[in-house]
Length: 146
Ligand code: RB5
Image (cartoon, rainbow, N blue to C red; front, side, top):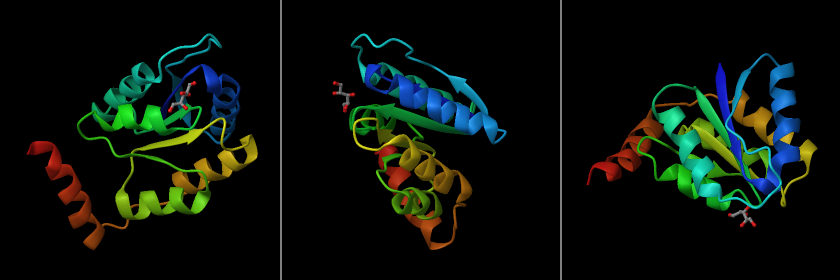
């Protein structure tokens, strides 16, 4: 399982904590940066991670900015991406089970590192249920073709 990560300047420390957490659990992590605390633009990282996931170069993506909002909006502009911002584990888990999200985002200014790890663990541990949820996900993805 390959997970690609991206973040802006507000999330460098949290990114490294989550990356170490994932690697300790056996995931292969590709880190698209940034590792700089100088102000940068989150859209670049959201798109980069989105394109890697959409192209099948990674199985899943994790994005972190100050709120998780801007970077997930950018990722969602890439065809094939279903990114969601989660500040608690329940939504993260259900986003995989019902919405088949392929990118998880959260905010370094919103959640602490332990909560972030729980959010990530619930998301990674959940499985898409398919069935009626597949129909609904298909309806979402068809919007990209109109
Ligand atoms: C950067 O200051 C901040 O706007 C960004 O990290 C993110 O929260 C945007 O959605």
